[in-house]
Length: 260
Image 1: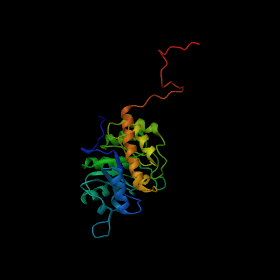
Image 2 (image 1 turned 180 degrees about the horizontal axis):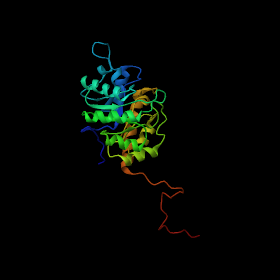
Image 3 (image 1 turned 135 degrees about the horizontal axis):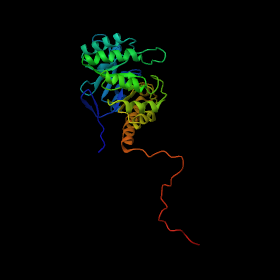
Image 4 (image 1 turned 90 degrees about the vertical axis):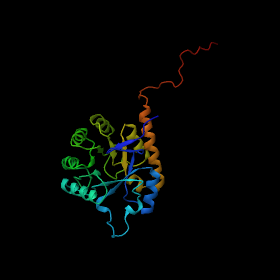
């Protein structure tokens, strides 16, 4: 039996797909898509969550008994700002499992890796389970692990771009460089992108726009669920080696030759 569980912060998750909550046409559509995805971890942007008494909130549509909420620090441009946001999330009862983002550029949304490393060290020291969004650099991935990250989340491509895994070789190097889970975060556009990430050996995939921005988010969420499962199974099964020339599917050794 192939193992399927993902472990984060000492907790077991059956699904290796993590989904976001932004950009959906409605909260009802968000809830339906998340349910179809089979995801157990759902990211929420702390700065965009309405507080009690401030009107309808996405938290009203997520069952805390069914989903593990993963607060993220989207929109934070300094380490101090990101750390403060994580403290606010924990005080609000969202727990200590956090997706850490420290953005370095407003156009590309690439991470500020220096600030990210600093924030990871601080939060890990304070007892948070830190999942940092980083670039596809194996050296930085190893530094984040050494700083206390519970997983590393390299981008496949810029956030929301839908370009897929632009540098699979760097992702493979990251997988060799660290022992913590590697979860591709950002850039997935369709189901084949998710499958590729899993076939490389990644432990999970996090996505939002690919589902929420599709024409049919519920159908796309279902496709992503199946793609992650298929990609993981294919990785565990082991693909054949690529070859330049053809190899006959039916061996001819031992078959007698016909004579006229």
